[in-house]
Length: 169
Image (cartoon, rainbow, N blue to C red):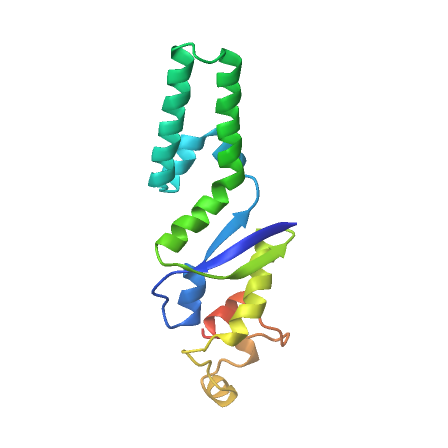
């Protein structure tokens, strides 16, 4: 089971489709890429302060190893531990960065995969959001010739894309 936190930008658009496209889903859990490639991961995610902290700690570990103040086995263990810590806290660092930039946390969602989590979140979030672009009424759709032959939703259910766009064509 995966868990994601959902974050919204400080200046969300008024239309719910545009708002939905700008939401950030941050996965909660261990990050192998952050553990194995810490400096690259930090730079890719633009985490400048944690990157400087990482450089400082790596420099300290290297200096301790060069001065032979600590056995080389402990130096190796310290480097592995540092990667492990960043792997465990990578997503926390991303949430911290979003919070510093003014993003608000809308909630958390769990599911089997990322698509399932997004669907579950939007199933709950979308009904509470206003529709700015109203869908055409039934009389307008039939008068313009876009009835059932126009590829409308013959099944009666609404797709996620249709729900996000307010069923506009």
